[in-house]
Amino acid sequence: MNRFSLSVSAAIARVTGSALGPYQSAVIRIGFSLTWLLFLLRELPHRGELYGPDGPWSWELARRLIDGNGAFTALMWSDGRAWFEAVYAFAVLASALLLLGWRTRTMSVLFMVGVLSLQNRSVFVGDGGDNVLHLMAVYLVFTRCGQVWSLDARRARRASGARARGERVTDRVGPALWGVLGIVLVAVTGTGRLDGDPVVPAILWAAWAAQGLWWAVGRLTRSAQPRILLDVVTNVLHNGALLVIMAEACLIYATAGWYKIQGSRWQDGTAVYYPLHLDYFSPWPALGDLLAASGTMVMLVTYGTVAVQVAFPFTLFNRRVKNVLLVVMMTEHAAIALILGLPFFSLAMIAADAVFLPTSFLRRLGGWAARARGAARSDTGAAVPERAPRAPEEAEPGRVGFTA
Image (cartoon, rainbow, N blue to C red):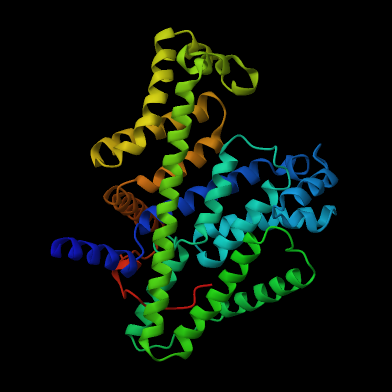
């Protein structure tokens, strides 16, 4: 009993004392923001047909649907072309800034707004990856996804170095951004733009209030207790959201695998064979024909896909087997992107799979990227730091600052 109590206490201390998986959450942030950004840029010439006034799903049809389901979308605030272009540009900018890790706590919220605004405007546009992106955009709001590999992490290291030298560090951008967004939030709430589904408005107001409280405690309170309490709450939210993302990925694979088992098309191989002959899913017809010509290959892909999807949630208890299946699934998604022409669906699924990547591998990946960047700087004559800076989670744990 005493040993059990010690284990429970250690688990609670670990969950509340730090934001777990900093590298995994950073990969998720980069993966989903990159997927959405690339999709928006690729569909830039067709944006009006997909989500704007030129599409078959008109603004009035979207209004009737949203009046029934209460979904959030800023595109319903006006049916003008200028407003649509502004929202589309806003979604592109928010995705790019989240990808870079600039003010990730704010950008994750704005990224969610951009994703929901466009996807809920035309719910019949997408290839399956949009559903994953839709969910993950909401989960990202609750994560501390800028601890590593972000502009926020670099700014935190510089601020820590300045404090160590006795210099005063002030952040004017964060409070200014918080104030502007507060004015916008009050305006859209006062005009009834957020009426309908209460979930998104509640998230927006809670995020805005939490940012203000974070800043007030960090700057106006000398006692360390309120800062520690806020840090604990933030860590719990982050770890809980990361757990939900992992559970969501397992649920996707488990349900997909078990539904495939129940269908005859996956038992006789037609679910793999026929899409290879559809023009819509044949960007490289010769490659699809080559794969479909081999009955053995079709059988291996069919039964291998089902087996991997059904087995993956159970392999989480064995790290080595999990890593092998993770490589297999990512390879499969890459093949789907190439053979069936579904790159954004594949990117979204690979980004979701990345939450299970080993920390040691991600650290080595970051080290390779840092060395490559250092080599590039040395080739151009730029100064190269002698020692790589420590990761934020290794320096000054529990420090509270305003990072809107």
